[in-house]
Length: 332
Image 1 (cartoon, rainbow, N blue to C red):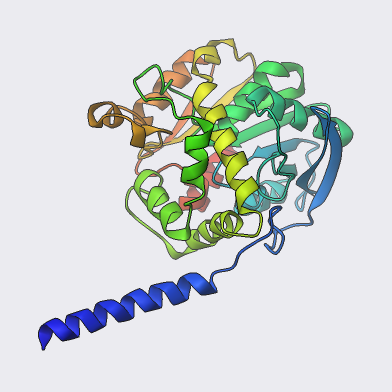
Image 2: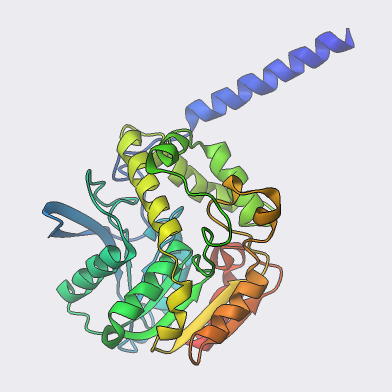
């Protein structure tokens, strides 16, 4: 009888899980259906011979304007919308805030046959800012956006007032440390399997040190809804292409060439290391040590200031927004 009860309970749990999965929202290939926290605008341009449309938010100061602009660059598993709390904090302190979705991500065009590179995305961003009449801005990037922000500062130092890096990836060369290369075809097959649970489990392990808060679910549902929506094939293909971009274009070797004032915010519990799942156990365990990577990066970037958040993970602005934004505004 106990065995029967156990089987029945397991079946009910399985059915409830399937039912929950069926009720989770899905979004169009440009994240149609997901509500952004501010008006979504469009920058239409041509790149690599393709007509493209970059979605962005341009938020005016809600506090006394200080005449400065902050550009927020999202990570690979994030969108401009994920900066919601940061936009509120910055705008309330007098900053104009521009938060784009990069081409290939979120609410922007998902192109076929596009050669993704950090240099290309930096150039796209620079063109957006030029179209908005912004000659110089503070460039702030998180995760992959940190890689992109560093590349932007390297490519356009005259247009970068301050570089702000929040747990940027690319602070180590994973391939050089022994992580095997994966082809885009292989990455694509993996991306097609993306689900709410797979995203959550990854973030739980690498981002939040095993501690989950209900408010994180919104951002997981955003990514999962895009990956499981009607445009899932091109979404997965662009995700595979940008995974290859991240893996093959680490910025760590050029940190010493950054010539603008730099702030580096690091949650020391972060363990993010793209491709670590392909590496040997020994190699995987040596990767993603942000407590040390942050110190190494701050030492490599001339004049950089490191602000460490002990006990926080990959996304301190999401995990502890009040603590993070207080430190950010004080540093700025």
